[in-house]
Image (cartoon, rainbow, N blue to C red; front, side):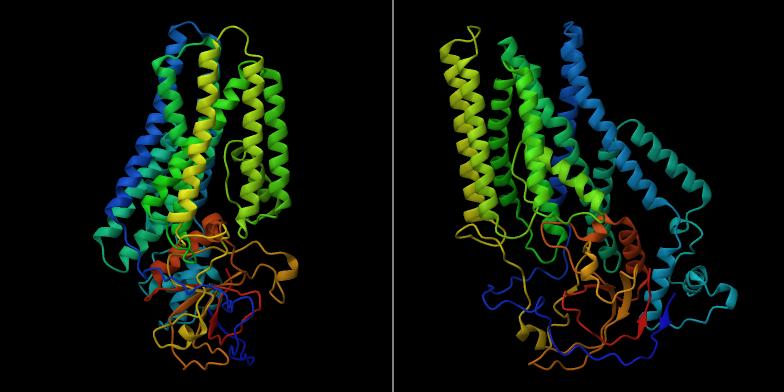
Length: 562
């Protein structure tokens, strides 16, 4: 519900907090274009991702059927288990997201009414019985700026039932990823065909859908493709022969793993305005990097597992426990609660069994060097143990060839990693492998008339908030973490900013998450849904502002808590 501020004198912001001020040693910021647009390469990239998904799943099912026809029931069962169980887990998570997004809520209507009020739209005072949040939502709807909050987007009840039925069928047949890919393509094309403000709204929805797909596919890849790849390589080594379908399935699984890691990093960078986007040239090099390193890693696993099945299981569990403890010790901040963060760290521990995955901002050099040396030692130890105890089923020549394949594949992967970081990193060539580059806004830009945003202001698609500790919340009231305010002017000392009138600002009263974490509304679906409604309801584009750790102060006219 929109309400006037209590009239208490609030001092104008007259200084930039230390946490938000630009560092003197930072390189000049590289500004991203103000309006991002959906392009033909984006469309082709999504189509290729859809083809990778189909090739991975279809080759596994085809191979399972071939095992069944050959009466290799044990191989058939293992192959099918690594297809069905991960797929069911992903479908359940995807349907849970859909159910939450589609459920009727009054918070979205309330927040939209607040933006309408903050934007200066005339609004009649609600009656006493309508003075609640529902009253505010109906008032905004009566003004013709919002759909009535009786149903999602004003859809009739029969349409809602059909939509639930359609999504139920889609998820029952394990096609949630296909639907989300197609939906992302549709939203991208719509953003291309429309003009503002419809273009902006479709683009934001496309970014949200792309984020969902990347999270789901990354989870599915390491639950399905990674163990499937190790299984098929182990079967080929154990049987001392390679069937065409086995090679096809292993290749598709390896490509799916490398593709999804690079795709996840690209979507994550595209979603954050404080990081430069990743070019498709960089993405292709990153795919080659992970393709060769994961290939060497899984081949070493398969060689060792073909001789030492029990010890291989012990090794995997021990490696996962050590990596998970290492990640937890690093104090990541991806999720909105402590237990979700622990589960997330456990999932990243599975990723760390196969490849490097950056989960914390700061000096990457040390962590990457430690991980790379650990993987190198493990690969050498696993391959050596297999070579010494392989028995007489394989000749020395073929054994040496496999050892050389493991070594050369890892060397090629390391080479492409150097190419990416030294030549194609989005922040430019990096010396010393230190990536602490942020796109700070210098004080001179703040004083310039061309600059209309204070340092903690986000003007591109909505970004995320951070799960804060109790000590960081300061004087904020419990639960008051999402506020809509109109920012009238901001001043920086020593330079004085001229007063200016700005549009509505979505004030998130939490410090922003650090890269490579997702912004909070990409994780907190309540914020995501609210932001979409706010964006579609406001006469002008609302901007998203995060609280600096120094608690910046500003003049407020309207305030709402969601």
